[in-house]
Length: 266
Image (cartoon, rainbow, N blue to C red; front, side):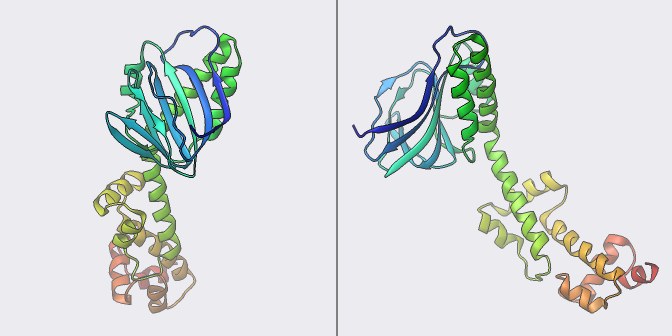
């Protein structure tokens, strides 16, 4: 077996205490290529969160590759088989036990196949390990609180990833709205989201469609330029509208009057 660097690890030493979320152990490892952990059936929940490289987790004859930003679990009673053929694999893990594990697994929608949860919250794992180092009941309670927060991040990771993609698209539209050829479809492909999914997420996050958000960015700039007295043709061109007539139609639909009349009233 190839050597494993035990960067940090902590185990519960005192009584198990009470509560829904009870931390048994937590650690931060860096494994080298060829590493094979001890294969064993374990009667607790084990969670792996990949930081760098990748690891291989086997279950029921199937092998799953755990990549950076992904999480995977072994459920109580499953055969634990962890190894890597990557040059190195940097990851955090946590073990949980207690009488309510099945309820916890259902509540946080945990899976025993890898899924994207986002960047590993290393500082939270470190807090759990420090809390476990406190041998009193207070340390165990703290570890449970931090573990609950960690589970919440795992459960909400896919939603956070989607939110990050929406924010990325918003920033790009706010920066590049002056391009008449700006394509929502191309941007959806670039960030790896289907157009219909992007539309649904965008409306949920902003209250408007991506196309309407892009138009709002253009109109916001057009209002500033109208107040400054710039020619309508220049405003239309520099705010991303294909021509002055289209700019006028969009402006009238939004504000009820054409841009020329709006400028006279400023």
